[in-house]
Image (cartoon, rainbow, N blue to C red; front, side, top):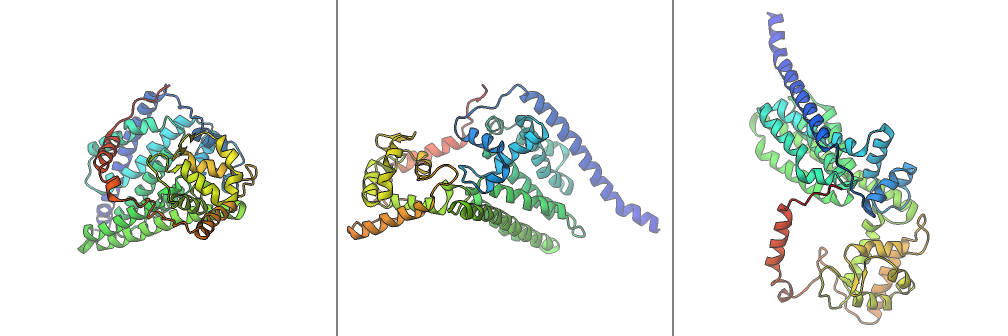
Length: 394
């Protein structure tokens, strides 16, 4: 009787193992077809961002965490790993996507009633989605961040879906590692991770009740650890930059010092009519009249790309200010960002100029100025959200 009981107890485990092996075989076969399909696609060269990621991956990797850089180090570390393994980056990133998708879907397939057909269809959609294919044509951080996020979510699902008598530490480790790497790949998404994990933990309260109440506790724990991992990775990188370069942030253009200066510039009471050029000519003229450091940087401003007759374009503003700070590339004087902000605020107060600080990044304006444009803006954002871009094959 004991032998029969053992066999009965092992039967579900064997069935689960067979299901996992079947999905693994299907996933590998589809990956090989995908690699054959995209084998003729080429990486799209981009003069600024892509070159910066690639060049950083060829340097001493320790400098990515100590020397001021224009981008977080995550994507460059992935490129360096692909080069160390001797795998072409396009092939490597396709395999990365396949592994992340497999880790995301495997616990759903093994632990739930989702069949092999439905799981395969979801796998194909993620593996062959046009937007992801086009994104992987560019050696940027967007795809790396998404794949790490997908891997982390797979770890969360595996941790929550596992049987009560088993505590899958490997799933927990995958979740922590995935969201920690997201923190050093696209640091600006920390708030998104926080909201997603808080929403997931809150939703578990309604999903898991009664006999499944223990899954709720698992969900809260793993979501909390994902938040801590993401935040800790970002803050550790920020601390390294602060110790070496004098700014707190994963990059100079995302640092607290820069955002404080940018907020100060937007608080200057000048007329702004072009939403793509908020730091316009009038803003710069008033700011330079209040800060000697900015007056000394004026010649550098004029020689930079992105400087329009009406002012600095939205994209170029942070790069222009940080690149024009005194010092060479390895030792920029980023502490001057704080000094410039302080000079503008103090001199504006001395001259009785009333500043209007932005609220959550929004410049206060009368309703009559922005309400007529609101419907057109909503329509434009909606169209961009559903648009599939043209091919980027070169």
